[in-house]
Length: 429
Ligand code: SF4
Ligand code: SF4
Image 1 (spheres, rainbow, N blue to C red):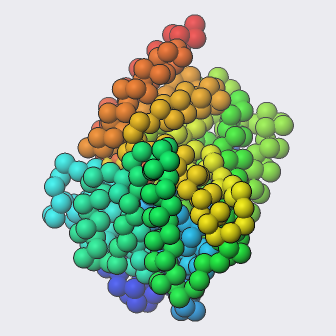
Image 2 (cartoon, rainbow, N blue to C red):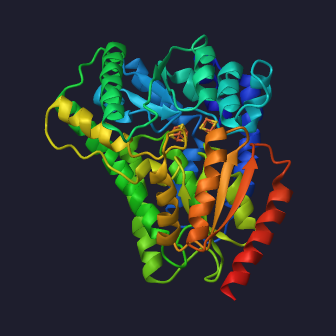
Image 3 (cartoon, rainbow, N blue to C red):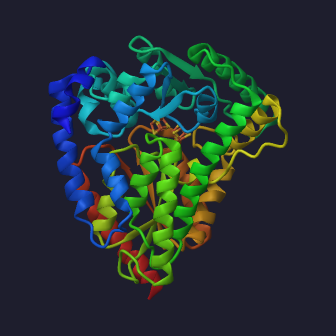
């Protein structure tokens, strides 16, 4: 891909040399982790293609749209209301933040004992190797966790950054009213950025566009509850990750095409792992592309990952925006209601998530839960206590893994997972 896009990358201010190193490393990583999998669904071809062009064709597409006057908004969190971006004819894309590659650059500025996701995204902007950052007209952050909140202040020195203030008690009426006002302010910001008025009609269309994407992802997710699962955890994770970068309409069609194939597989009893492979659910911090660490280790142990209770997973697509009226206000309230249900560990109390983890584990017939927390993520780390208690009450085992993006502890994690699988097997016997 590199040769044909060099001029485009230069034009958006990327560090070509450093970016080449990144692309080569990613290409090798992808080949060894993804393309080596056996018995993948044929329709994964599209998603392999998207990955191969994730810094190429998709960036060209976005920049072609920009040349026509459309705007691109970059985001990090599923609390960023993409419906408002699309209602103003802008695109919203996920920014790079899932690789160790950019962490050393960030650590030259930021404290080292900070969440790797935060260091990774800040490093990607600093070192000029994320084309999504370079293509964004605005970055939208949110006051979810403290680390992110403070780094957005620094990020704002490098790229226009708008920070949404999210209520930390989103279930309360006061919290919802507060969020409504924040959405109104963000709507005004997006209108100013794009020069387009967000009308009720446009917002309704955008809600439908994103609802369709969420429905397709949920359809895919639900198919994984079958035994054997018709798709690997790694492949499902990849699709969830790509959902933040691809064109939503095209992506939805491709996910539904894949689901047709997966339904056929389910009818024929075709799976990707042995029928008796232990079923695991991953719960915890988001796994931004190309963070495939825990899934690839789990698959190497012979387990099959059947669900992700994660923002790159069920938290993103479980609920839809369901308007009860047709005015802009009604539609904004529907967005408030949907987003208030995202059970991020940043919020308190967060009983919704605790219940959700056990419900999902049962729905997906998970025999064990891998609780995944990034280092220095206090919210997910502390919340593990309550999650473990709730799982224990349902006689479900949990293994907590606290890690970063580097692969130095991969062998140790694999050994711990193997021991965990033995415990699960012992329970079954
Ligand atoms: S875990 Fe919380 S802060 Fe992170 S992406 Fe999800 S909602 Fe946003
Ligand atoms: S993983 Fe935790 S610390 Fe990192 S950005 Fe998300 S909420 Fe913040």
